[in-house]
Length: 400
Image (tube, rainbow, N blue to C red; front, side, top):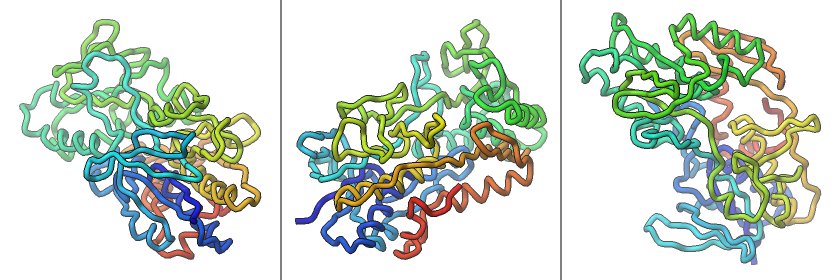
């Protein structure tokens, strides 16, 4: 009887976990291991690019890759986990509730935008967190020219000045010019609770973001909190109001709620604490990876971030280690000591930093070339050819 590895999720971490698991099973000629991926669709949605235009194109099919590497795909939405009985309940394409059994489980269900208790946010704010919501936002932008030319129509508010908020805000001026024409006066405003632009980053990186914002005409409202959102715009906690027909919520992310199904310790973002092999602490046979894992990247106290940069490597190590645990060979402790930041800054260019202290190495056009290379090539799935896919899935192969 075959031993079963079930990977829940087909994002960056889930996809790479599957290929990495298939790789190690193949290297050890273990035909008695069945690797399954449970996800709504056999596709990788390139979420880091959802701030861009033509978001429907930012999807990469995974069926050919899975077929070439011997991974079985099951379409469905996971609803609950029973780690005692080693089963996952899921809703199939016909809406029926059914179950899958496993010998090893890899939870790779990603994250979702965090919704705070802001009046009107769910009803009136857009987001680019998932493909469906990003499509809704894009359609809204395309329909803006049909509205009367008013300051409210021409003002866009981005709530949150983190990575996603900065990339979206700096992308919007050029998109609005394409929609309205060069002569229309538009305004992009970032509402940020912090006291400085890019407060989460190094001083050198903050200065670049501030410079790009100034040159692009982006206004920052610092030390500001959103009190409510309605069809006329945003009201801040100090009582001031920003008239806008377009408010986008980019404040924070939370691990997929499936993590709550497990009796295990989680951090304040809902991520499961894992050991160096990415096994969930206190749970035998259950691994977590990507955005649902709180994992140490090194011995210096750094923790993997909820980014594809870390999810890709986390997936490779998790896939390798579940197979290693089944065939009783040494697992590979997860390590990802190199860290870079590559922040798209719209028509201004980009900024590329190295290290956890974010030393700025490239800006403007040079950094933009790196950004395009990363987001258009590096993070995409490998070619659907077994040997090349397995080579790319090696956890110890060079990566960023």
